[in-house]
Amino acid sequence: MNQLTKLEPVSYPRTIERIVNGVQASDGAGVKLTRILTQDLQQRLDPFLLLDVFRTDDPDDYVAGFPEHPHRGFETVTYMLAGRMRHRDSAGHEGLLQNGGVQWMTAGRGVLHSEMPEQENGVMEGFQLWLNLPARRKMIAPWYRDIPKDDIPGYVTSEGVTVRVIAGASNGVAGAMQREDTEPLYLDIDLPADSLFSTALPAAHNAFVYVYRGEITVGGTLLGEGRMAILANTPQSDGVVLISSGPAKAILVSGKPLGEPIMQHGPFVMNTKEEILQAIKDFRDGRLAAE
Image (tube, rainbow, N blue to C red):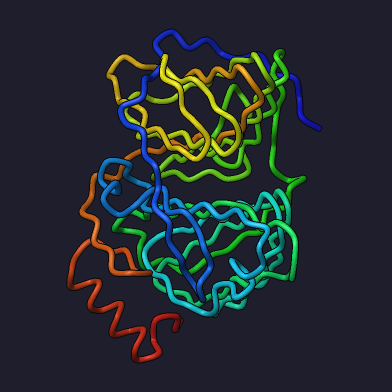
């Protein structure tokens, strides 16, 4: 049950620095998606590396899924709004991601995994976010957690805004996941018409908002459906305020930047070219996911 929560005051809300339109892409065995956070934004939105959005009711766009593939050096956070996806990996983890659930996977030193739809029709919709690991933790053991919908804390404001706290904490409500190094905040926010939502954000944390239904106003700027707003890191800012005139839904993501070099080659994200070459060699030699 979502608790009724009073919004903490935000005196100096952030403004929008830039609006991003995403690019059409495909991944896995041809799954169609929109890549919102692309590689050229990784330094600006450190510690976040990628955000993919998928939403379709055409099985041809998703039925082939994501057959077995490798990862090293970061975490993946998959949030399923609609549909069912089966996860299996080389560390022995298996789970079924369903409506409203989250899959949080730490690739660490290496994992091979697959994500395959367990449906042949209907809507498939969700997000996949890549969260970097600090250099000292890139080679930790792989880890995995399935978080069912009912295990994600949430709250409702006096204006009827419903918030799901996937990670971090918002207005006194702690989320399902916490991460010490990157301190991610991940909120799914459902705003009714003519409502306002606010939450605190540390001024030094990088943050973005992505609208997936309707439109909202942030810092006096209108942000439409399917658009991401990078929020300005104004030194005195203490949070963000979202205002809706009609019904709207958005995710708000923020985190503490690592400030380390980012070297990505496909599914591997390390700090140096040498580490990338080693990851490729380990994968080719069948040692990527070895204990």
